[in-house]
Length: 285
Image 1: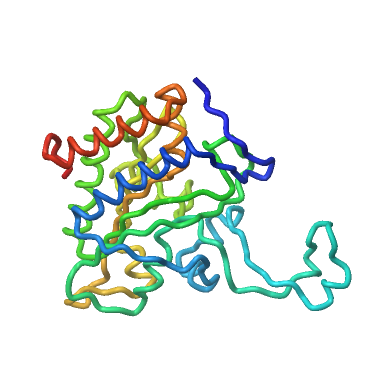
Image 2: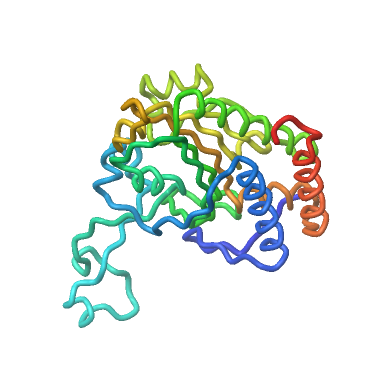
């Protein structure tokens, strides 16, 4: 069954009761797992500074996704009524809407020395200027829940291992067509040597629904963000990081498609699967 949602031609969704119910249950599921890891719930800024994104090669590798946030120039009020806002109407800006929830966390810890690993979880509205948009599968603005780990190589690798196992355990208890498969991180050029290394060593794996829709990912960044943001461990070494992310609208699409649009069944099955894994029926808790 194909689930249709009110989405404008610009990729802006209108979520209604059944969709909100499923989306909230997905967020609760990931948040519950985050608590088992000891993650602190945080609210990160809704915008990030362009200079920080430049540190991680964001504008080199995928500038086409970026949404800059600009204010109107004073003269624009005399010209702008109901038409498009043009470049000449805008002031220069240094702010960008994030395309992933975790960036703000790494920037917030720039220049710090960690005595112990940091675990955070956040929910953020993300924005991506895609080439096309399709129901809840691909949106211009969407919500993401992430669990973020910054620590040592060993602790980051263990976090990523637990995250992948937890996702596997949850999915095994649902009727969804989804499986983990290797991918590459978006902040690396997809044709570059780093991206190839990632695919070979499985440092990024995506939970893919129906063969082509990534609904979650587990990312082991090695010390990439540690180096670029100057985050160090107690011995002065660059910190390693990892994260688990869930696209809430994409999960909602997957569950409503699987359970034939019945949000009550989708929520019930999701809660059952999460409770079974949390109770120790799986190995990811």
